[in-house]
Image (cartoon, rainbow, N blue to C red; front, side, top):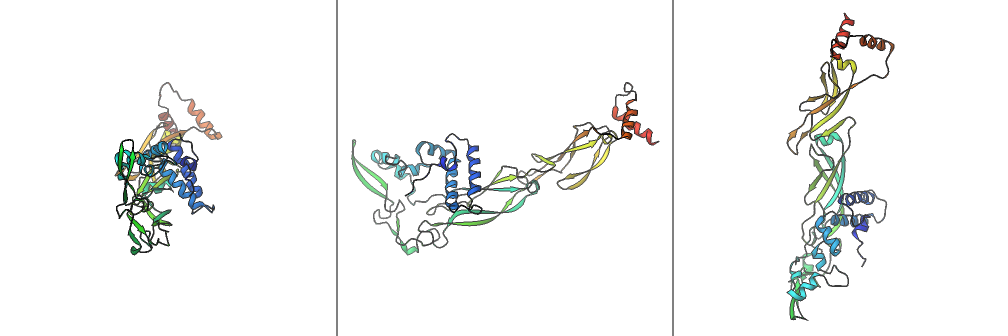
Amino acid sequence: MATKRDYYEVLGVSRDASQEEIKKAYRSLAKKYHPDVSTDPNATEKFAEIQVAYDCLSNPEKKANYDRFGTEDMNGFASGGTEGGFGFEDIFSSFFGGFGANTRSRSGAKRGSDLQVDVTITFEEAAFGVEKKITVTKLDTCSKCAGLGAESKDDIETCKRCNGRGTIITQQNTILGMMRSENTCPDCGGTGKKIKHVCSECNGSGRVRRVKTLNVKIPSGIADDQVIRLSGEGEAGIKGGSAGDLLIHVNVKKHDIFERDGNNILLDLPITFSQAALGASIEIKTLYGLVNLKIPSGIQSGTKLKLSGKGIDNKINGKKGDQIVTVTVVTPNSLTAEQKKIFTELSKTDETKNNNIFERIKNFFKSKNN
């Protein structure tokens, strides 16, 4: 039997790696070895190994157990997680009558692992919501035996060694005298059942690896780096255990001109010196199409104008934002001869009598048109 590789070695991170480093390493490896895209002949096995390692190290409780005892859960440790030595089950069985064994599930049921996939969507899809097809490779319940692991129900019989109890009673001499202990039955693994003929499809595991495609509705207002949890869409449980969950990590592409601040949409709008001085009506983009934005005369660079209700209609929190337009007055750096002449005449105006330069520019152009 092959020795299980160290989880940190599987992900290629140090034992003091942060959760962000573990997450980053997992994403990189998962993309590289995903069976749908990888050309590696062992991609399926490697992908499963990566998933198991990440499932442990991304869970603080499992990680703490793994770092201390070399296994991700105390059930695993109790059943012999320490190679060549005593586990907690051995200690408690000797002195307290099998405490460790009694804390385990006698049915052998175990919850399936959670899975994580990444999905990338556009800025607009995040704003309005979208439905995406998600493909995931996972261990699913065997359709032939319905998870039983046997060719038929008749192939499942009561374990003769423990008479269906899942545990056996043993006695041993200790320094405290004769001690009676209750331990997991080694013949049936604590299930109380034995299989005469295992299922030919799943080889008795009750699970088979298959590719499943899901239609996932991503709600409007989802933000970059948020996660959608689909309960029960992870890997199937073992021996009747509940299925894990599917975690969909959402990546939102950056937009060419828009930025997001909560439910608000931000837009930088450059305008000319004359538009700032005289005012203007400018057609600008919003998520909902083009609209005319009125620029008041004398506007200052950095002024923010609000388009009410033109932000994101967030179905997650039930709120709708606005579009905030920040005006930037662009100073010309290359003037025609006519423009230079106009600005030269403008510079001759008496600035000490009227400090409102935009009002002077407005009046100047009015006088030129009369």
